[in-house]
Image (tube, rainbow, N blue to C red; front, side, top):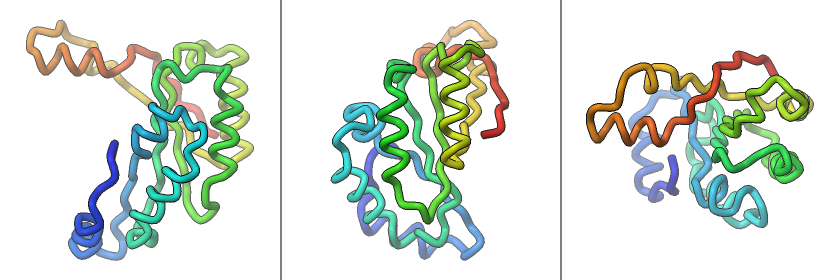
Length: 155
């Protein structure tokens, strides 16, 4: 989910799923990429308000950060996460190379997520990069998926 669904779509999703179904919605790019988690309280409120009819069916909200979001941006991540509704589970996917280098930046990230009971989303882009890009679709996929190691970390 990179844009807000229309209210009628949210209603349809509710009607088409059972009580035991769980959604995992991605925060819109307006929050994660354009605003870089800063000064986006109104955007976040709109996001949660729009998805409120599905609240009982939310498995986790997923925050996918761009590769430009690095260690110096962690204070913005902590402030953003600390301001989220406590009724839900959250996961964060990072793409900056320093968060995969097993150094201080990765330790700070994992520690901060653990302190907030937030999951670190595991990104495995190996299949996308395992073959030569010979088609426009494959070239596009390889451009969009970072080539980072898989770090299975429990936060």
